[in-house]
Length: 171
Ligand code: AMP
Image (cartoon, rainbow, N blue to C red):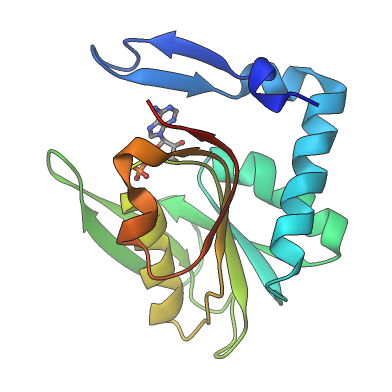
């Protein structure tokens, strides 16, 4: 199936000059949605995870069904201030200012293998922050996976874990 044909591109969103890759159209198409989850599950499985982790919020949409399909637990990495329990956090730099992601500090036991899932890899800043957050609490991160990789932004080069991507765009 041509999954790319189900991804809508929207120019100048959220700001001028950015081409936004919109996965809502993929989610609306039952077969494309199922195929995406199946392909992600296959790509992730070979890294032998104990758990999967999703990055808020589109990482939840893809990560949770993949974890369900593989019979694994699912850890959520959230924006600051959303989680109720005792937390670990990691702050990272953005183009302007910075951002913080958090997770419950008892969600992963030291040495557990956690594969990360997000919808899209752009510069790699978000994925890199998630890897550091997980490692900070003792997790092993054998790989990261995404549906879309914007190869021209070279996010993969910023990460020290292998990245599984289903679709690549080079401009
Ligand atoms: P980055 O940290 O630069 O790799 O950005 C990745 C995060 O930002 C992902 O969670 C994406 O959902 C979102 N994102 C970045 N660029 C785009 C884009 N062009 N289209 C859609 N989502 C994007």
